[in-house]
Length: 385
Ligand SMILES: *Cc1c(COP(=O)(O)O)cnc(C)c1O
Image 1 (tube, protein in one colour):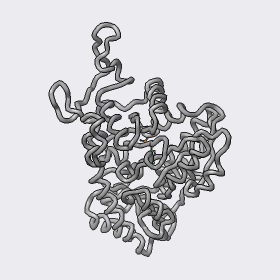
Image 2 (cartoon, rainbow, N blue to C red):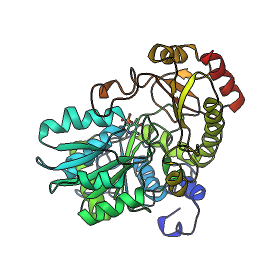
Image 3 (cartoon, protein in one colour):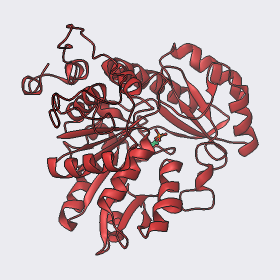
Image 4 (cartoon, helix red, strand yellow):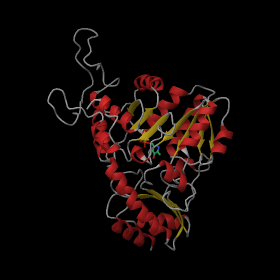
């Protein structure tokens, strides 16, 4: 299905059809895995449909990249070997030594590590702001600021940033707004429609959806930045491979139905946790008492599948809950059909220890899968004791 005909379709239709043109050779309804590095040229410089070498472009990756642009409502989609590879490409394309980025006070630990341990060594500066407070974001902007970087909902504390309000601040300051949309997915939240310039994804999570692939993406609102990023994607080389691209393209087809079930299950789990004697605090934007609830309700279709909570008895008790869970698998990552449990302080967010992004030691994070909600609640009940 070609791009021009897509405008009138709803998300679920686009997720299945965008980029999924029937194979011109055979009519195969799913793009083949073009497991190939190079392409026969019809005379020197005579490329067939622009394909030259699979770092520059590969048809399976192109199918995914077209799909990504459409499902995020952007102009250009680019697929990378991981979420962090996508972030690295964005940072090194937009920032030069001396430039500054405002980063959130709650973020994926690997994103923080990329700023603090990698690009900082190359002269890119950063400072931390509570992005749930638009005034704090405005105050953090410097003359050298190039980007405001937000995660909403954030990892692991499920903080909510008002994307439209932050986009307004970014526009007034002449800086770009980057939204990491990994936790929400484009089914639940469309940052570009709300004014973001770039959407970042770990495709590893909800987009892939089955814990069987690592990937990342950038989607831009405008073509010029899209071109610059595509140039750097090829020049730096951390592209998504054909099979990985195929897996993610397949995952995106069921994104809508999965996110509906993730959200419904998480709402039930959050309610169960809220009433539990061993739980001190539940972080889930679907709860009316969550400080970002109203903004989340305004900018998200539903509240997603991620929940964190604090144990009343402290760090060791939180660790023991993780160890006792049976149906919730103890592991890093998130967004798969199977439920996962983890201790951010010692696992996904060990790299933020001692920083402004440090997470509570008694915190447990859940990626609520699409199993039976009753079974999930039963497992948490036994794990909490
Ligand atoms: C996992 C994750 C990333 C990094 O993606 P990788 O695919 O692991 O490189 C970035 N942002 C968020 C919110 C994540 O959860």
